[in-house]
Length: 629
Image (cartoon, rainbow, N blue to C red; front, side, top):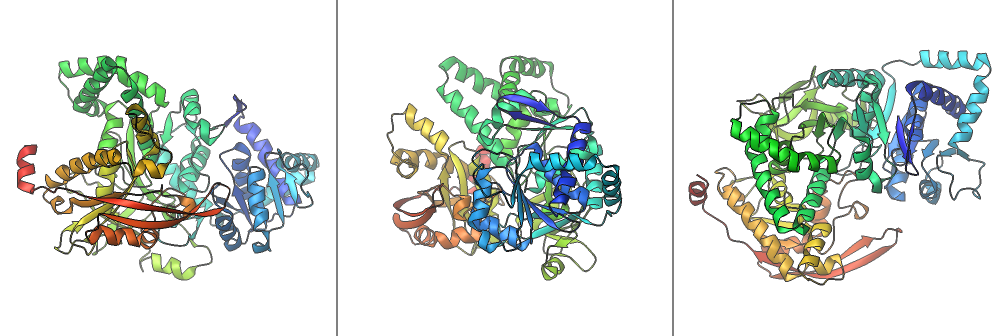
């Protein structure tokens, strides 16, 4: 394991990590942690928090990771529901959050922390530095009897014991605690390590939230099975710089991260000189024509290979180096649907980016794309030893080696999620492509609707088309049981702010920039291009966007509009912005809205605005089909 601290990469071998974890486990036991009890893990990606997970599992206790950016009330819900008596946290911020809701956590007895800064004058009767707990464990292990006790404690564990509780993102309501077992987790990780040929020589950057199943599976479980090196960044702010320094060979990024990276590239190109811009766009065109075919090992004419080789020297190689992808051998994206254009861009410059489909209840993997079988509109065939079935209503069902043992303290919800013959209902609508045999995910089953004329309406498909544009950060589409499609758009402040600076557009806030007429003109062009694309598709032609507005604020997890994994909470947004949705459909040209917002320090406020609405031109399918041909 590696960790960048104060600008210097610290390194621990597996043997050194084992010694620390053994001592840490004994130290936690001295504080009272026992088999079957839960311990919250709160903070960013740091070795001592991963070791907290390992030490707890070694004792037969159950770690419960919580998102580090969770507000105090969210933290209180998880800790209370999981009945945690212990918490291992990163620093003063997390200690303060827990102490602020202590009255809601009567079972919480002890906290251990990694970073000492700011905590010297706190009451330490129930608060302990991790290094002190580890030191106490080392001292105890000097007695051979304690070592024998620890080995016996480890041997007493069973594969069917709960090994972790991961809380779902809560897109449809309150989070649920997903119980995973050690045996199933290791089986699933063993299959996928073999699938991608991961070894002890690989390196992964551990920057994903500890509470997300993606981090626990891709980095923690696969790291233990393959023996590869997990590298923890110095902070969330230094992830990009640390990515370039560490040069991972195995990488995962949700679509939102890949969108943000592409946005940065596009902004830099807009600021570049004329010749650089022309070269960039020319060689990106070359990459689109030949890049993916070369990556897949398909035949390409000599001229195409030569042009691509020149592009690799001048653009693709340097670009991958800037992004930190120079040594990436396997890269995955998942978490939500990725726009086909975004996916094609990264593959065209030589990044072996693949898609997987999974859920917390599956311990992540359900499907994954094998090398050489990569399609932008599929998520691959079933993973090794995974069985997938499509229900009569189109919902994807699965059985997998890593499937969950149930929801914590919710047998009724567990039964509701399972079929009588043991398949897990995903809540996602999909089907197998006849040509490739790969699974296609349309959208959340409950989100796929129909317009009043019977046209299929998959909102995510439309949203992803718009989100390919660097100027657009988030989109929420409406159309189910309505006559036409409308969208609410969040602009990307970084991209649009850079554009505003280049074009001498003066603004004082996000709200002011979002409402600027020139910004509306720019977004209108993007929406028009998406409408032309939709019109060329016979199935989707009826879902062209008739009206749009730009929201006066960014959608925020602290305001309940996004989950902690940055997924849109549709029902909450529909309720909060009901006045705007009404205005989109009643022909209004503008609408007034007042929205409660949460500031960084936890204070609440109200943001009021008059939001403009624009009408769009739609196109006939036959006209656009002929134009495309």
